[in-house]
Structures are given as structure tokens and as C-alpha cells.
Length: 343
Ligand code: SF4
Ligand code: SF4
Ligand code: SF4
Image (tube, rainbow, N blue to C red; front, side, top):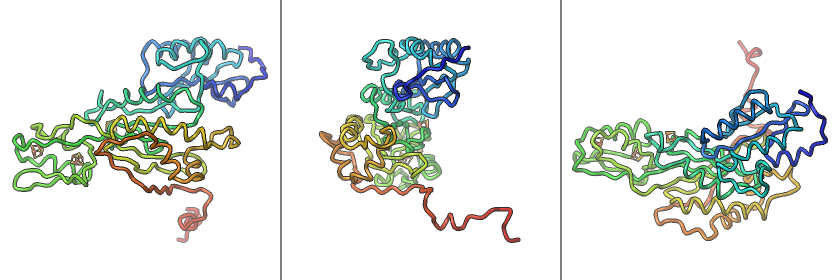
């Protein structure tokens, strides 16, 4: 294939969700799959694009999307046309028909399988992820959001700006309980040990219980069942990166869907106001912006017009530690080369 040397505006390409390639004259097309899901018609289109414009390979990204490498820069417009069906099938708002993805900033919204597949799922993760994706995308702000069905966190939501974990409030029917203590055993072994036996019946420490639902799954008589209300733990401002990677900290627990939805949508106004547009390609991570403005200001924005459900608990003060590669710390000083160790 002839590689055309185009004076391509890489910034425009990246906004259009193409990735810069180290191979001169080539790019990679990124395909979003909100909630880690794609219909087979769109999947077939990914294959067709990879065959026709790429090199017959498709990469799976860490954020549950696809990347089609080996695309000639001269074919970008044609690829954008071919992406139309995929973009339409996901209901993405576009200003330009057959113009490809309108933005790349807000990353693909990730989700574990959740209750549609996993017995531990407390809610439909994919459905919630897709609802949020429709509300926030397209947008140029660099925001990472992930949903996980329970506190097992298979989707690694603590490495995201907003991590949403499912919670359930176990309902106990003492008349169905045969006192086998399976729930007590598994809550202790797999979770936080919030159950104990009192006079042959089970008591749940509501302060300790994290709503993981393990007791429900291991009860043989359905004496424990899920609450009909679905709840969410929200963890904030986790990140990767070379500067100060850190895990997200707990912000809310027992929040309802409406509360979670509003605080996520509100973050975009905060970013509109405080993003440092001089920062490298305007990709300043939210966490660093919060470091500049203070958490209180961030809180003012994300809680605007939010009326949390009565059961929702909010953490007023958050502290992030994380890893700092640039610091000389005790751990670093105690490092040694194995070959030079004293015998
Ligand atoms: S996080 Fe929970 S619901 Fe999601 S896949 Fe893991 S165990 Fe299942
Ligand atoms: S929901 Fe989880 S933490 Fe709560 S009692 Fe059941 S197993 Fe224990
Ligand atoms: S597992 Fe079910 S039946 Fe067994 S003690 Fe617990 S609630 Fe009762």
C-alpha cells in the first residue's frame, strides 16, 4: 500500500478519536463500546474496517474498546464513513454525518458484566454505563468512569475519576432461616464479617455491612434476599499516570441512581470553569484540578442541585495518597541491587 505523506493535523485526528501511531503515515481508529458491549452488526463492521483499511488485526483496549491499527492517514475520511453504523447503533450525538467520532476526551465508560451475567451483580452495570455514556459523550474533557456490579470491583473502578460499585441491602426472613450459618461463614471469609448468630438467628451489623450480597448468594433457603432498591458506592478521583497514580477514595455510599447520575453530569461544569487550557493538550487530569481548587470547590460543583436519597452517606473530607515517583522516600532508600547484596 502506498503511504501518503499528508500534512495531517494530528490534533484534529486525535479529537476525532484516532490514535497517533509511531508508524509514519499511519493511524489507529478507536471504537467505543460503552459498558463493554457491542452489537454483532457493529462488531462485523469493526472486522470489515480492519480488513479493508487496517492490517487485518484489532486490538482490545484496557477500557473495553477496540483499536484498529495500520490505517493509512489518507483513508481517515473513508474510515469515518464506515464507522457511521457503529456510532449510530450506540446513539452518539453527531454534528457531522459520517464524520466519525466527534470527540475522544471522555473515555469509553467501562463496566463489569453486572447482574445480567454475574450472580454477584447488584444492578445492570452495562445499562447504567450506557445511560451515562449517552449523557456525557461526546465531550472533549478527559474523564474516566467505570461501573462494577459489586464491591469485588472486577472493573477496577478505583483507577477512575468516578468509580461506581453496586450495593444491596440484604433482607432477612427469619422464618426461612434454618440456622446453617453459611451466610456468617461466607461474610467472614469473603467479605467483612458483619453477621453473627444470636439465639439461633442471624444479626447483621448495619454499620459494618458493605452491601456486597455474598450472604444472599450463599444462603440455601433464600432467607437472605436483595433489597428491591439498588444502591451505589461512589469512589472518586483515582488515576494512573507517571506523576502521582492513586486509588480512588470512598465519597458516597448507599446512593441511589439519580444521585450518582447527577454528580457525574455536574463534573463537566466544574471542568469547563477550571480546566487549565494551557496544560499539555488541555488534558489536565481532574484530580490535579481538584488539588488546585481545593476539594470544597469541587464538591460545590458536583453537588449542585443534587438531593441525595435519605439513606445516602457522604464523606466530607477526602485524602488521597498514592505513589509519587519523584520522591525520595524511605522505601526508595532501602532499595538495593540484588547482585550487590551483602552475603
Ligand atoms: S464486580 Fe461483582 S458483579 Fe462485577 S463481575 Fe465482579 S463479582 Fe461479578
Ligand atoms: S451484604 Fe456482604 S457485608 Fe453485608 S452481611 Fe451480606 S455478606 Fe456481609
Ligand atoms: S445461610 Fe440462610 S439459612 Fe443459613 S443461617 Fe444464613 S440466613 Fe439462615
